Image 1 (cartoon, one colour):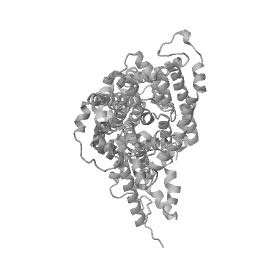
Image 2 (cartoon, rainbow over the protein chains, first blue to last red; image 1 turned 30 degrees about the horizontal axis):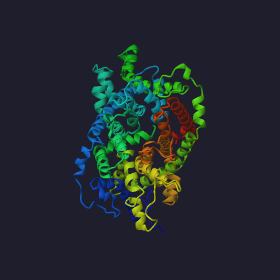
Image 3 (tube, helix red, strand yellow; image 1 turned 135 degrees about the horizontal axis):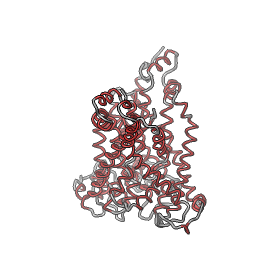
Image 4 (cartoon, rainbow over the protein chains, first blue to last red; image 1 turned 60 degrees about the vertical axis):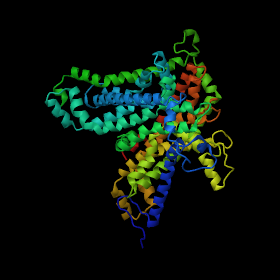
Length: 287
Length: 310
């Protein structure tokens, strides 16, 4: 006698009680996952005494909205400048990476060339060498070029993403050829076919790679720490990290600054989540 | 009608390089050149300089010094311990989340978003929250507060500054677990979506009991390709760990002598006070070799060639 009903699509075979238990477990985990965000807001809007009080309160006793303006006036934490740097770096890295990698991916996928495979494997080979292992050599190069503490030193060396190139190549290999052939019959060369026909019809992959690159650039730490040595070149991550080790640490300022620093990403995340998901799915699976 | 019939091969070669050239030149300049230069530097005593003179040539001296340095070897040990914690933990949690979320009929998008949202957070911000709020080691910290409520302990465990027992591992591992579990959950969800429903129907007809049996004989084997990709990514990312270690453990006085992964060690060797770029380069070369060997071994171990046919 069967007491359990099976969902034919998923093999799901939980009883009613089992299903309820699963929902309870998911809700508990979801709350746990949200705790750090809650702490960011709670501490960011509390007074210093409230944060360090031994009696835990779920919400600050009095909300200190003034923290939001105070944090922009602290000379030890150049938050305004750091946000500007991070924005410039993340936007130009995203645009540059997507343009360079998509052109290369298209060329590799569509323009017949005798050594195309050799070029492709030379690019793919750099995926075996994690960027983090090359930070010492890259630092050596950037300091030889005199690019320490400059925006170009922070941006240009990061523009050549073998991963992005690989994703674009795989995507363009599956792009419908008929569209491009029609364009060439109309007399468009590779260049104009690419910009007029291919790019407008490939927006999802551009959005997927772009959002992933943007998140990575905004959150990058090691490279900006090594290259952005002067205070004027700090990104928001470096500024926060440096402030953490300051002599008299201001907790409410640190937390409100950290909360401000993730606002752009949370917005990007909520607006473009389906593209980010698509980008993540492409990043792990090799077809 | 192919492009070949309109453009001659010469023109096509030119266009290939117009598209691919800028990327290849940049990649060469900022990946291959630094790597080659680093190999060169690793044979010199290069303090504070990137162009040592011939008299500073030390042969394999830097490699000998690196491999004889207990701190370097213990950084490799730290990586192994970290990997032993973070890889199974992330694998189990992200697979568990994916299995639970995949079968939801209501609010699936909501739960997926909540678990995925930490991906938007940086390691620096997460480390701030972990180090100065949850595990700050004093009474007003969340972890100690919760322990106090539960009646366990005196409520003042120094999570990050005690080595006996090494509570710092709990802090380090949970940061990364929180940040990356949602990312890998998305990969597993994509893998689950690709499993044919007919397999489950066939299994039901064959009398496979739902639940564990179905998971063991259908779901898990069908996720093999995803599992291999997830484990490879987890190990490579663990090897590159820097951000959370640096931000959780360093303070105004520097970095403590324990829990130094390879990149933290390299950072302080090559870019610390005496800027020993020769020694640092030797370390980078050794790490690159380890990664190359490990990648090949893993590929063999998992039989990457075979999974494609599955």
